[in-house]
View 1 (tube, rainbow, N blue to C red):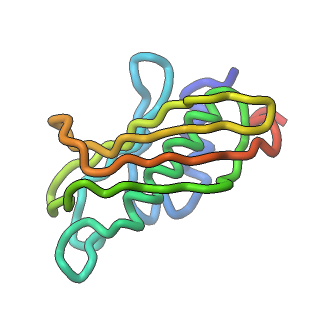
View 2: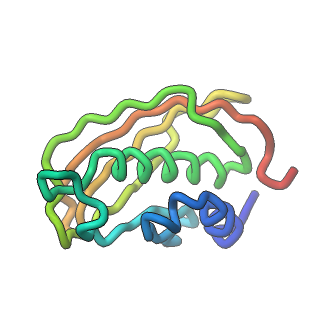
Length: 135
C-alpha cells in the first residue's frame, strides 16, 4: 500500500490543488485530508467560498482516500449538499472516507467542515479505478 508521502506527492501533481493553495495533511490514522485557509481569491461575488472550491476539495479528498488503497481513480459522478455558506478567513477541512470498495468501483463520502467541526457541505461520489498507484 502507498505511504502518506506518496499520496501527498501524487495529489500535488494535480495543479489545481496548488493553484488553490490547498494543503494535503497526513492524519494519525495513516490517511490524508485536505485543508484550506479561505481567502478572497476563493470567493464568489457574494464574498463567500465558491462552491466549486468545495467541490474540488471533496473530489480530491475522496480520490486521495482511494489512492490510500493503491487505486488511481476517475470520478464517475459526484453530488454535494451545501448546508451553510463558508465565510472568508475560515479554515475548511475535507475529510473523506470510502463507503464501498469494489474491484473497480469505489463509493465515497466527504464532510467539509471547519476547524471546530461545523458541517458546511457533504459530498457523495462514485469512482472508477483505472490502475494501481504503483503501476
